[in-house]
Image (cartoon, rainbow, N blue to C red; front, side, top):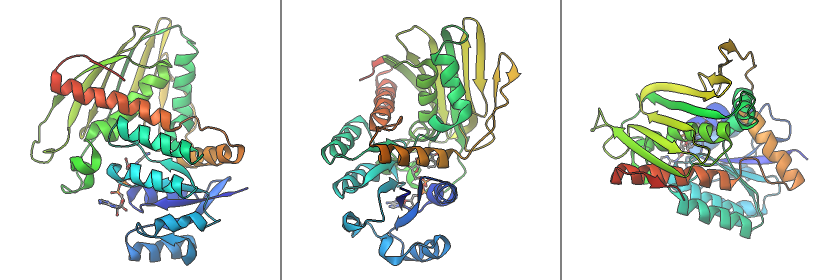
Length: 330
Ligand code: NAD
């Protein structure tokens, strides 16, 4: 069955990436909208041919429970709203995809996982790169130790923030944090899926060149992760630098991506030679995979637990910034 997805929050990512991707998906389609803005409901319903009965606002959202057209709710809101809408969607009997970062902290992630378990609904995080061929190649090369054990990994992700100084991304109560939560999470993921291991401790430092714009949230953070295999793993996130790379050095070779984490134009090298892997529509692949999981009643390869793992690391990075010490993860 082709499953119906309702997008909650019709902002930049929903409008720029997810709705267009849902025109290419094979196992699911854009069936519903949840928005607090009546004008957006109007323009979106005309553009994507969504019937009025499948349009909700944040107040009447729970009545989506009785709507047979909607199988999956996709939460694309500011981070502070992820927990509430994930739990409300599961309580309404819908399977859930929640955008990254999963929530404000690991404690919220645990509540979301528990709620979806309780209502017997599948939960997945919007980790599109698990379905992206260049990043999947990094997983294969690293995890299968094609060039031996990975001994060192360096990664960074960031962009020069030129947006609205009043945006939710810069308000701690809404975002939970700055570039680390928004961009660094990709580098943390990349480290984990290239090594195929979970880090045990982290030490971090930060730099702020614009304390006015980044009054509430982190601008640039540098970290080192301790992995059980002993690889030296360094990473960084920024709202003041255009970074997007993931570089692994193994005992018998090296492999890297750059740009590593964008929507398109990703590229990579294996021992200095181009990977020559095509780019695909990542969001379409991600949503089609989740629809298949729902149809087969099978856990996604990026379940809530995967979001929780990253949030535990992010929580530890923020603790380390405060203590100036190595912090255990968990
Ligand atoms: P955005 O600001 O463009 O959109 C946010 C939406 O939430 C808007 O439609 C806004 O109207 C709505 N909203 C409801 N209550 C709000 C409030 N109190 N304050 C502000 N907005 C409110 O943000 P976005 O870039 O679309 O990000 C949304 C989510 O998607 C975030 O979790 C973000 O990290 C994630 N995201 C993921 C990717 C990815 O590649 N996976 C890319 C971009 C964004």
